[in-house]
Image (cartoon, rainbow, N blue to C red):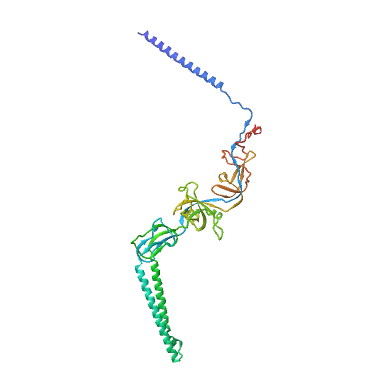
Length: 409
């Protein structure tokens, strides 16, 4: 039994040795493969020269001439004429005009509301009778004065002026004449009150709201309706104070700046209305500190315009493109090509030149350059990752942009 134990140990030892040998062979094989890979890998060779490539760019040219910049502003539609129509006499409303309803249109002088006029007709008759009576009393007094004058002349005596006026009944005559004028004024007032029982539109108007109906009892001051004029609306727009000098405010015969009005959220693409700068409001707007201007728009509801013309609505928020004053002898380029510190990138002889410029004005689209740029200069429009003076540039159509002269040691 003891002889079997050494035999088992010898078998284990021989198995372990075989395992170690196999591992060593695998390691050696792997090392040999790695050696071959690293020693046969291709290496980059240096040909002794570095080719410097030019950056591919696009260019454009500015436009020289006289231009009118466009100033963009936002504004709100307001009525040029707006009133709260009120009653001037009291009574019961007995009739309404056919167009007297919210959203209706009425002409100047059109009847809107009729108030019961029975009491006012009676008042006119009473005042007319009172006037006739006063006139009759005046005639009687004139007869009395004539008789008094005859008696006075028959006495053939001179009296002091005060006594003579009393004798001739001059105070009584003046009182009778005053009574006639008072009665005549009372009649005119009664007739005026009678006229006011018919409430008419003071101008061609759009009715935005109606506050009464048939049967309503009204008194002087009762609001009947809210009316706005049909001929003109205003757009109250806000612009920076620094840009007011570029606008034309009407002064005498000079018209105001033309304005293109658009509502991009509600109107079809390309549809706009025309207006004109009407007045500058002498007050800055709230916290924005922007200047307020009024733009007048004729026929705001497009009643006389062609089909497809959108009407303006009260409170509508619109965009205004205002035509500014002329800028002469400038080069116009898109403002996106103006770089930091008011410079432009130029392509000159295949090199980048960072050119400072003087900008007379910038609107939302263009910059107007009065110094430092000509219409022959090629302005680089491509955004460059690396920007430095003298950087090599080439255009897409340049086939020989890189030549032997571009190769540097």
